[in-house]
Length: 355
Image: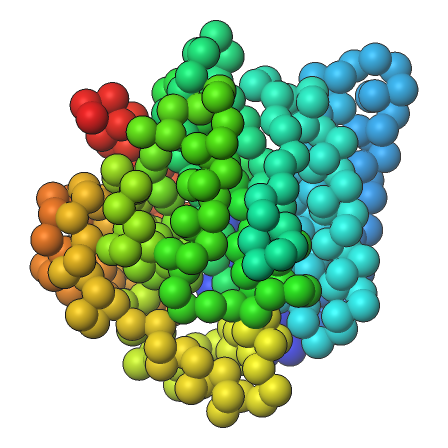
């Protein structure tokens, strides 16, 4: 393993996530084994993304569209992980990010089911998203997928499939401070505002059931979605994965990469300003406003966010709560994805079906 503590931190905290979300195991091993210092992280992952992108473009040129969609999706995930926490070099990070976006957009028409890039009005500008609808369902229920601090819509194919297989549409979007939204908009604690704009967008389409909307969020998104569900009553069901109850309370224990990413993506000028913003990310006095059904997942071995935060949230909500603590799970329990991914998707399908 590299001696650079930033590389070690990235691997120690997030390694299972890479494979669970679409990186081939051998790619993960080869790329990370080649990285000795954090400054090489982005270029190493981008180089691997180029291999998959070339295969995808070659498949397209030969008319093998299904294979092209898979290759290009993998390329997009590689490029995403090139940029995911690489805020020390914004130019290099953004270059990798644009490649992730381009590959995913190129893949979308060739997926099963296909996807559509959508743009959602927000504060006089736009938030970018990906809409995918199950085949042969005229007006499906829809699950909004909300990102965390370092995730983006290009990473979410594995999660989208869970809901699509259950005849639910997915609308995966980059909110303020996330993915495409991180350049023009800073992170905000009151996430019901962008979620409300996404729901407005859904209501203006005639091919989605705006009366059956679920909300899903991962990591910091596991704070965002309970927060949004508390105040945005058009949400019928909510899934939160490994979210903090009080982000400010754990600030001092966060990895340096996480703190710096939050500082940059919140558009804070220094760490103290970022810390003060983090103090606003609390579900105290908010959780009791959650009346829709909620499914909360946490890993007992999570070194980033204690599983006790999940327990506290479950205790305080006013509506039905299902709590799953995975005893051998890490952050987002990506090392034990089989213990919750299918189960939460089944739960969401049932909630939206029963409304």
